[in-house]
Image (cartoon, rainbow, N blue to C red; front, side):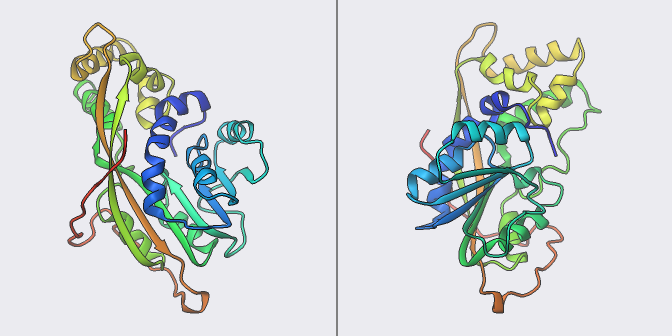
Length: 289
């Protein structure tokens, strides 16, 4: 899994977009009056914070593989009602049916085994509870795609992000949720506008090595690194100045209901979630930016 261990860099690269996405995602997920909720891959706590605001009295548990991100969450949310632990999404350390709602934002597309993580999210959700997640749409995420376009132009042998687009195509999340036995499954799209104050605002998190693209940038040697900066400045229209700019993005969101235990069947293997047969047309939700 790509590195997201630097809390400050993560916040600049992804945390702020998580806060932009969270309201639309939570409105779609509809956790209702959940008394307890699990945030799988909590990052710096954008979703946990909004859950506390929108679902008063909800006991919120967040898990992440990064000890630094968990430490940042514990410092940011010291109040009772929050709990943060280092844990693996594919092996959640909680009892069956422990939560009324289990949510995950911008995580599944990064995991080696999203099917196992989805099955675990389902397992720890009580029957009738909500299980929801969202990922970036791989074809509509300019923040990432412009970087890889220019990387490949300079370095055709770059590893790119092949294998990291699972769960990031229309229909993939719906197929995955159905495969793990969830009921009333629905997928939708959420459109966003990501605004940057300057090129440095865009470049600094990448230079810090956050995410797959950042990992490439951090390892890049001269003259490739400088050439990449030059190409990106030209591509983004910032030139040598520090003009602001905006990039479009789209997230894919899915929700389902945990089945009664007596009615639960063995989860089916999701053999090709990226290529489901004829996914239905969906009208994107427009998030406020």
